[in-house]
Amino acid sequence: MLTVELMAKAGGKPSATEVVFSIQDHLPALYFAFGRGKTELLAEEISREWDFLLPGEKEKVAEIIREAEVQNTGLFGHRRHNLKQILIQGIGYHHAGMSPALKDLVERLYESRLIYVLFCTETFAVGVNFPAASTVFDSCRKWDGREFRGLLNREFYQMAGRAGRRGFDPIGHVFVRIDDRFPEQTGFYREDEVEPVRGRLAISPNTVLSLLYWKTDEEINRFLEQNLAAYQNNRESRRLKGELEALEGKNAELGNCFCENIYQPSCFLLRAKLKNELRSLSRRRKRGRPGSRERREEIRAILKVAPKKCQHHLCVDARKKQDLYTEKRTRLSRRLKVLDRHSRDFEMEFNNMWDLLEALDYVDGRELLPRGLFALYLHVQEILVTELIFNGYIRDRAPQEVVAILSGVDYIPGREEYVEPGLIKLDHVEELRKYLLKKGVPENFCVWSHLPGPLSSAWYDGAAFEELMARSSLQEGDIFSMLRRTIDLLRQIERAAGEDVELRRQMEHIRHRLDRDEVAIMGI
Image (spheres, rainbow, N blue to C red):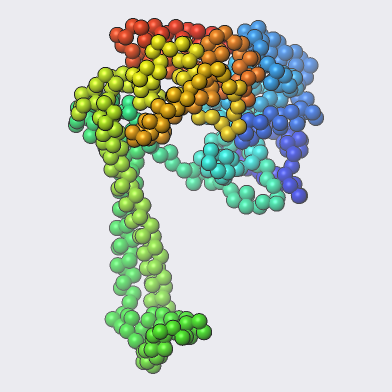
């Protein structure tokens, strides 16, 4: 069971320190903030006034930290020097920018009940089963990559649901930090309105190549028609059609409320409509319009007919309901058309991608050509990587250049990410990318960036992890993820190389050079 409380302060928001003071009887708490830097700032803010651990607990935390540092040299580095101290105070933070080793340390301390307030981003609520006595929302708005927006019901309850520990808390407490200057933020969440999870089949080059290579025409059609998204669309279409039929029935029943004189000169409904029109035409700005005077005279003539004496309020109520049903029917019909169009999208996307692969010489009908057989074993940016191989951008190149190129595959830089430029020029890769875009390759299947190249090539040359961090604004977790993705791509190319022993050995050599030290310790 959850109980949600709003926390406000006259003239603005309460500080994190004030929030913790108010909820100190409901700890440990997960304090969700939407920004990596915000979690760190809030943790440091309350560490200046709060210390939750007893001397024995501090010794236990210090011992766990020492063990972690023995296993992971340079665990905290120069960017996390404050984290060690605040952990010893029973406070921590957790976000995707931290190294896996550091995140694992924080999680172990929290699981051991040695962290009383953990500031974290929403990723902590996904796939990690660490409940708390309470959860706190620093805000109910977040940046989704395009704009700031309010949290969805699904997002709110994914995080709020962490409140309440089985066997400890009969009630899970959820606190929301509200700025009283913006009362609209209190338009709140309902568990019975949680948005459904929607299926979305992504028709990638690998999807098309795999289906053509492994499946018959009948199996391909069944795959396109019976995936989760199509199933959900068909189920919703049946529901909407049922609602439309019910509305038609109700509309027909309302028709029995009207007499044979409906919309005749004596009918109240017609007379009310004409009176409104007459008032509109009598306004100064419409009186002089062509045809206005004639229409007014026509209406007055109709209104001279004696009105019928009847219970016209029944007709008025019936007409209002019919208007509501008509409006709802229009919305349902529009949604039904969208679903019908989407149900055909999968087949259209499949055929469009098939045509593109044929134009690029990946397939000839259903037969996979050499490029297609290579891309069959790739699962990220298949066309771009295949063209890098087949156009000579990888083979027989210096390994530093190869790793700089491959680390940029599928990499989307953050808004303020910076890396010191390296000596390797990669303009030719950008030219290839532009060429593929002109050939019709969709932008999302041609993603590449030069930005991580200097870091990955330096790592290949033996640079220390701290040196990579010093040469960029990237956090350690971002650098780790970039290198692991590059290692995984190298594995994919090894598999795709097949009997091309030279290419396979080239990729294997680079992969072994990258898979070392901090990256190898936390590797898969």
